[in-house]
Amino acid sequence: MTVVVTGAAGHVGGNLVRALLEQKQHVRVLVHQDARALAGLEVERVEGDVLDPQSLQRLVQGAELVYHLAAVISISGDPGGEMRRVNVEGTRNVARACIEAGVGRMVHFSSIHAFSHRPDELPIDERRGPPAPDAMPYDLSKAAGEREVQAAVLRGLDAVIVNPTAVVGPHDYRPSHMGQVLVDLHRGTFPALVDGGFDWVDVRDVVQAAIQAARLGRRGERYLLGGTWATFGELARLVHEATGARVPSLTAPMWLAHIGAPFMVAFNRLRGTRPLYTNSSLQALRHHRWISCDKARQALDHIPRPLGETVRDTLAWFDGAGMLDRR
Image (cartoon, rainbow, N blue to C red; front, side, top):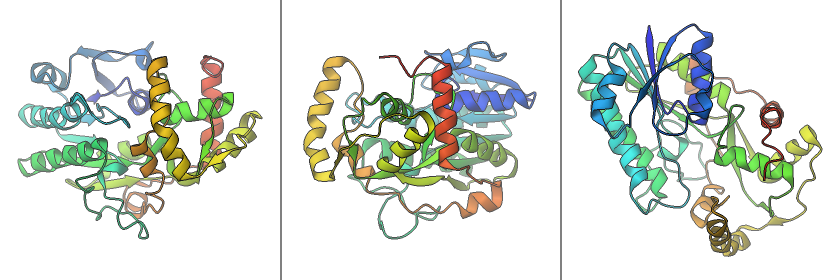
């Protein structure tokens, strides 16, 4: 069986490809730019772009299953419109290509950010509506991408959607935003902890749930894939337990972090690096605390591992890849 993966060179995609190869699947991947996560892997490669329908026709021809992960993640807005084009138009293109090629099933990777965080005091489950119009552009793009998938389902596509929370774990080559947080906590270069947190989920658990969704998920359904909610202080303590790294002594209240965010953005722009947080992303630290994964647990056997195990394994992988001391 030919299994196609878009976004295969990303953090989740690289882990998914490895899991599929372990199952002896024939994996075909869409390669756009950076392919470090695929080095040494026996995969069939198709050069292309989710915004290029012709390359997608070549990609999905003869495939029975497509995992669509290609996306742009940004906490700094979408000034050029690339994020919306990739996350919305790209998803529409992939879904259309799957219909035209008669692909048996598509698994679309969305995000917790496709759901509204309001009301904060109630758990988020798959019945929660989309984000408000004033939400972060990333949130709006992921919700719009889901609408493209649901529209394709009405046209005959057999598709399911998975919604991970904040993903961390091994094989994080670039690294991801969340992986960079762990690296900076280990190095002691994290300027200060922020009074907030995320729901963190292991990339390996996300991958296994997605593979189960391809087999067992119900057409048109969404499945929330959460893990453990932890503050940045709790995360720093886990990093300390794993590596002995010094825990930052300062925890900035949210109001102070908001004041400092523009300066961090400007500083990182001068360095040519991405900011660890912006005023928009700080809003997310106040929300998404109560996540219900009952549906994924019952339907997909999604049982996330302890966060401490994830932190240890991730930092061990960064260390083995020579990335902990890189500056």
